Image (cartoon, rainbow, N blue to C red; front, side):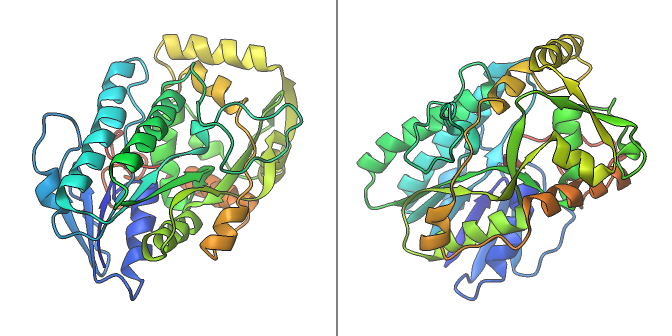
Length: 348
């Protein structure tokens, strides 16, 4: 198979191209990003392209490909949701339609846990049948949910294309630490203090719990979705479910209770003053995310995460303390002066 990966230089993208290149069923991997990386991965070629509307060349770029894995996503600027909508929604639609014009047989789209509607009141894990209407107060969840609706119609219009939607929880790896700090926390986060024994306490936001997954494990699921004859959505998570107490245990510190309302007010004030890039609506969405059941991925993809959620977060925190990254523009290590990128992969 010949596979094209958009957003190939970000957190998810670098892991996905490695996983595909290692598969004997894949003969060629083309990684696409807005800016070419200084990263050499055996079996991976690179091409520079922009998915934004008004650009040219996607159909030609996809010509002859058996599969396209679409990971490209723009997290910032959160103060300008029209800009992120243009790239994330209109750019993604451009990718989907280019796949149809180029005769691509498989489209694997990076959706997210963020596409789901708020979870059930009893907190039970949900499968892929749970509604995907997102949370209206956050650009990220609105955009992910809108693309779910677009793909519903796209599948009906192009039944010859095998469409797969991956809905992972939060993805972490050591090399993503600097990118994710820039995207969500900004320059004021004292990242050198993020190591066991240095932080005096960690705020415990009431009601906050989440699921996580090592990015390399998510990449294995993407690889399986490319080479196996599967269709439809797949939840991707690892155990256990995490909360602030679990993070505090990794960092060998204590927790200090913080009401969700107070956390949101502080975040909103910092965001309005451009001190942090993460918008308060994102916290609202995270507090309402459902827990996911990944049984379908385990059964149909024969997929099992190799790392626990705790291990994935611990590796990320270690990378955060050390300012780690990789030789791509979005993953550049802390202190390099690099910022975000429109083709940063993944849910993200």
